[in-house]
Length: 180
Image (tube, rainbow, N blue to C red):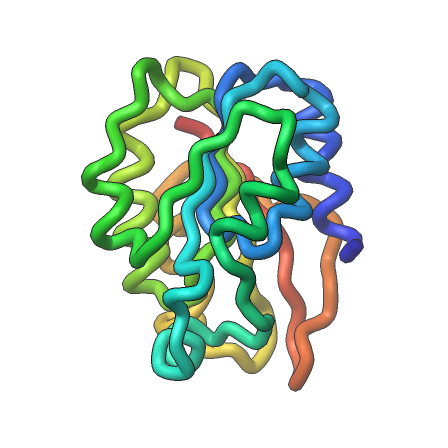
């Protein structure tokens, strides 16, 4: 596990959220780690899952292979989980949770366009005192006007967390927490 993810799990342990929303569920590993720390939470996971294509991978700078939604449901068996398959520009606007979301882990697409859209929809469904974490705060040769959360969080109150991981090809990546 990369260094920065330890910070996320520390936050989950401290917050003990009732609801967790993750954009970028991927294989469900991070979801399971979070749910192990607060097993009574309801988890909402968004991903392209098996609908990802080489074109979406290129647009979003994805380098990981994809898992099916059925695989992830089976991996998270025993927890209260709802998974949403598809482009978050389409699935998040339709998402209407019963109550506000009190913990968000935003680590889906890497394009500024996708992250901006995700944040615009997520911010409308947050519970009071929600904790929100963005991945992909880049430094180095990466064009942050096109990729990462830098452009989105620059106009928010945020703190870059201290753990820094290297990026293949140069530069580094961190997580940030935003204050809503």
